[in-house]
Length: 35
Image 1 (cartoon, rainbow, N blue to C red):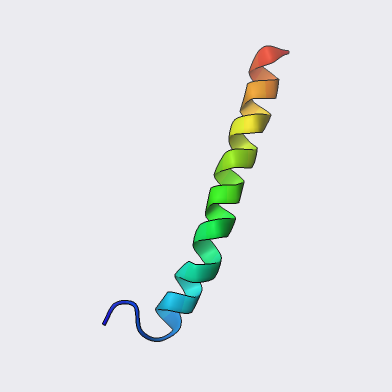
Image 2 (image 1 turned 30 degrees about the vertical axis):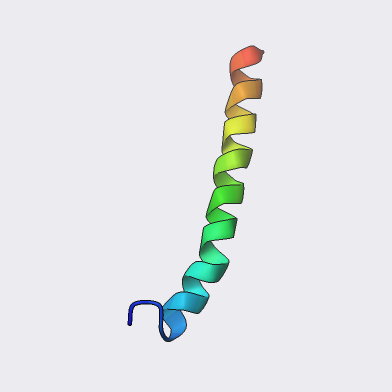
């Protein structure tokens, strides 16, 4: 039920982007902390 409709498409697109943002932000913060 929760997986039906536009919500599934939304999460299917949003989650990979959100994971990418988290990974990128961690890399950036690691570089900022190292300098």
